[in-house]
Image 1 (cartoon, one colour):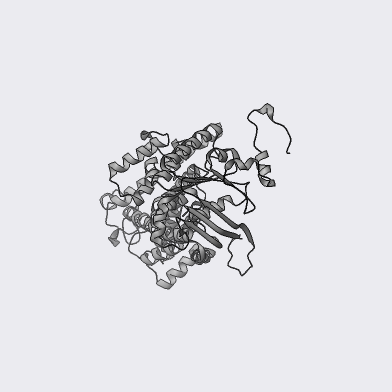
Image 2 (cartoon, chains in turn orange, brown):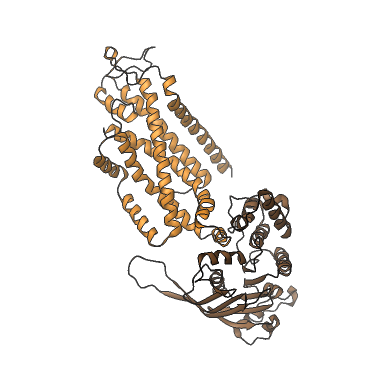
Amino acid sequence: MIASIRTASQGRWAITISSVVLLTFFLISILAPWIAPHDPVHVNLAVKLAPPSWEYPLGTDHFGRCTLSRLLYGARVSLGFAFLIFAASLGIGLLIGTLAGYIGGWIDLLLMRFCDGVMAFPNLVLVLGIVGLLGPGLWQVVVALMMVQWVYYARMIRGMVVSMKEQNFITAARMSGSSTGKIIRRHLIPNVLPPIIVMGTLEMGWAIMDISALSFLGLGIQPPTPEWGAMIHEGKAFIRSQPELMIYPGLFILFVVISFNILGESLSERLGVKRRY
Amino acid sequence: MSLLEVKDVTHTYGSARSFLPIRRKETQVLSNVSLTVEQGMCMGLIGTSGAGKSTLGKVILGLEKPKKGQVLFQGEDLYTMTAAARRKMRRDLQVVFQDSYSSVNPRLTAEQIIGEPLDNYEKLSVSEQKRTVAQLLEMVGLHAEDMKKRPGQFSGGQLQRISIARSIALKPKMIVLDESVSSLDMVTQTNILHLLQELKNEYSLSYLFITHDIRAAYFISDAMIVMENGRIVETCYDKNDIFTSEQPKVKELVASILPEHPKDRTITGR
C-alpha cells in the first residue's frame, strides 16, 4: 500500500520535471531569434574556436559561429521536425489502422502484412535505405522517418479498434442508425487517441535521436543549418582540442530524449497503457 | 402479417479466418429455426448457455447474415432489402444487451448516449432534443438532471435503464432484450422487468426476451420458446404450458427453478 503510494508520487514528480524540461526546450525553440545572442550562421573567421567569453558564452566553432546561438536554433529543428513526424505518422496510422481494424477482411490482411514487412527491418537501416534512394536532405529524412513510423501507430490502433469493435456500444451505435463514418469519428477515435498520444511521446524521443543520428552521418540537415547531430559531426574534428563542441549538443540531445522517454513511460504507467503491436 | 417471422434459419460459425488454404472447421449454431412474433407480444427465448439464443438474436437484428433461411420484419427480408429500407427498419427494431457497462461509450454523457438515435433520425432543435431526452430519462426512472453525467457515475442498473431509454427513443415496434436483466441483482432485476412491462403496455411494444432465467421469462412473456443445441425443442404459445411440457430439456429447466423459500429446497433433480 505504502509502496504503491510512493511510486504514484514518484511518477508525479517524473511527469512534472520532464514536462518542465520539455516546455523549456519548446519555449527556446520558439523564442530562439530573440534570446540567441548572434546569428547562428554568421561566419566570422577572426574569432574561430574562441573560448567562452561575454560575447560568446559557450565559445565559437571552427567558422567562428556562436555555439550557444546554434544550440538554441537547433532546438527548433529537432523539436519542430520531431513533432511534424509524430503528427504525420499519427495521421496516416489513424487512417490505415481504423480502416484495417474496422473493415477487416482482406483489406486488413493486406495492410497488416505490409506493416509486418516494414517492421521486420531495423528502423534505422530502413530509414537509411529510403534516404539513400531520395538523396540526403532534411525533408527526405522527415519523409523517410514518417514512412517507417506510421506502421507502429497503424498496428497499435488497429489492435485497439479490433477489440473495441466487438464492444456492445459500437453495435448499439449501429442499431441507432449511425453511419460507419460517424461511428469511427464519435466512438472509435476518441477512445483510441489518448493511449496513442502517450505512445507518441515515447516515439518523439526516438524521432529526435533518428534525426540527429542521420544528420551526424551527413544525410540529414545540411550545413550551415544548425542542428544538434550535425553540430556533433562538425565538432568531431576538434575532439582533442575542443571537445565541448561535441559535448554541448550531445547534452542537449540527451536531455530532450530522456525527458520524452521519462514523460512517456510515466504517463503510460499512470494510464495503464501497454505497447502492443 | 406478423411483425417478425424467422423462417428456417440455419447458421454456422467457421474457425478463425486464415490466409492459408486450410479447410475450415464449421460448427452449426442454428439449425432450421422458425418462429413468429406478433405485434405487442413478448416472446421469451429460453435455453442454457451455448444453445444459440444470442446468435439467433443477432440474426434477427440484422447483424449476422444466416447461411440459410429468411428473417422477415414487417414482411420484408432483412438481408435482401435496400440500404434505405434497412435504415427505415432500424428505427423499428432495437436492442438492449446484457452488459450495460460495455453498451455505452464511456466518453459520452447520458444526454449524448440517449440522443444518438434521435440525432440520426429525428431532426430536432437543441431544446426539443433536450426535452425529449429528459422525458426518456424520467420514463425509465432516472432524473432529468442525470443528463450531464457520464457512464462512470451510474450503477449497472442505472446504465441498463439508460440503454433502455436509448432503445425506446425512436418508439420502435420491437426490442430484442439479450439477457438484459441477467447480470443485475434480484431487486434491480424486478424493477427493470416492471419497467419493461409498463413500456410494453404503453407503446404496444413487442419483445424478444432472450434469457436463461425461466422465471424472468415467465414474468414478462406471453409465449415461450426453448432452445437446445441450435434447435427449437419446445414452443409454448401459452406460457403456462411450459410447466406441463414432456420435453426433457424443458423439464430440466423447470426443475432448476429454486423454490421461494430455502427451507423448501431439496437435493432432488441433481
